[in-house]
Length: 77
Image (tube, rainbow, N blue to C red; front, side):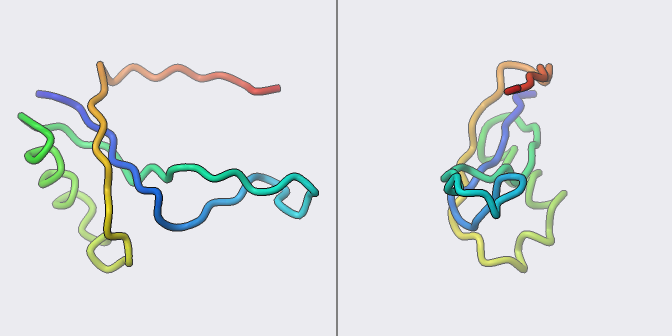
């Protein structure tokens, strides 16, 4: 199985303490992850697992294949 993360450029997110003088940063929103035999199969599985997204206004989703499912955590400060 191949692993994918699904992202969108649509919508808005805010940095912590967004009342500050630092402008909000344009970014991608992570919608979720799923596995499949290829990107289309993974997307189909993702939608089955996240049917609530069908009731949102998101239109464009980007799939990026992940090398593996390991996670690494870092701190900016």
